[in-house]
Image (cartoon, rainbow, N blue to C red; front, top):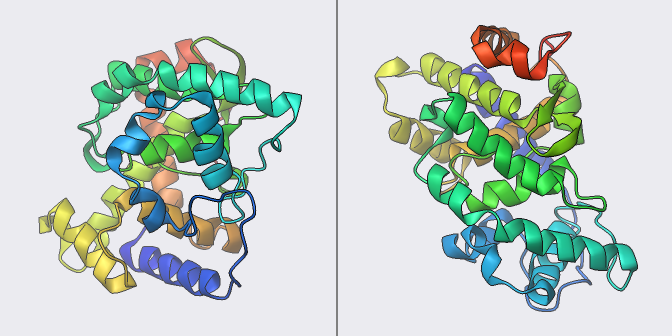
Length: 276
């Protein structure tokens, strides 16, 4: 994605979100603010170590006070139902498995992540753990919790973003069915970062840190990670269509995926993972 189009997409989304009327939240008694900044203010260790919460706290804090709020609308099953009880139990089992995987990925940022076999396996494991939660715990809440745990690496997405980018399905370790390829999406977002950097006014000489600070300043934000800035831009991509998304980045990502030896062996795609 070109730098100027990226900034325009962020500013368009910001203006659209500014038109929204505040919605009263009824499912959470503990918190009043559910903005991204307020959620991150709960602390890095809060999100990185959800295994420290018991089932009751996971249900109240993570489902009622995040995923099921009107701001984040994941539409998980309502409280007091057998489906909710089962989902909370499985969510607890899932987060108990994550600490070692998070520890192995903690030092990476999306902009310089090396998508080799080992790192892709780690990402697939985390994504697979979340996607195995039943009932009705899909790609969207999975990505939100992954991002909150490692905000410099993982991206949030939703159904509209998946559809607009034409993300295809892949197999996952330990999971019996094919699901939207989160790793292909991350690789595309990394390619977008590189293109943004190449086309910014200072060119490739700017450091990543300087670039991200520059974008924050131009868009009126304070120290948001590039993954969140991309997510804000992706809202515009998914709502305004193909005029914003970058076919050059999509083609480059598909070429990289095809060049990986495990690509055909493991996923056997009939079409490119992403559509222009």
